[in-house]
Length: 97
Image (cartoon, rainbow, N blue to C red; front, side):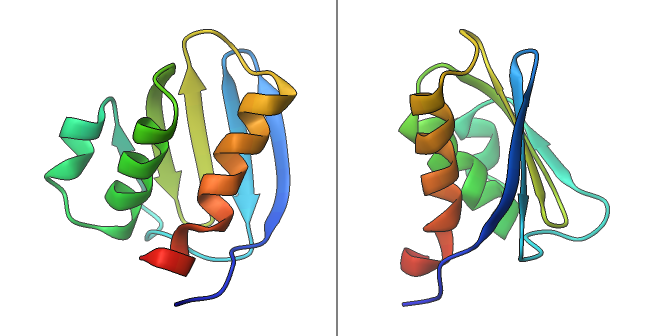
């Protein structure tokens, strides 16, 4: 059981939400995925987080994780509810890893 990841900010830009956290999730190079299947084969923290996000919302089309920033694309845009759901997945990521 780990600690909750603090969400420092989230901002919607077009069909993406940019989430900044208080923890580094990857190295500076970053990782991008277009599906849960693609992320499932990577085995890194960023890939596992991407898999969790894809599985939480069928409208998520891409996930890019770099250092402490997660950028999530969504086919149907973002509502307050979908943004909150995605940030909840991120904030609880280390609780159950």
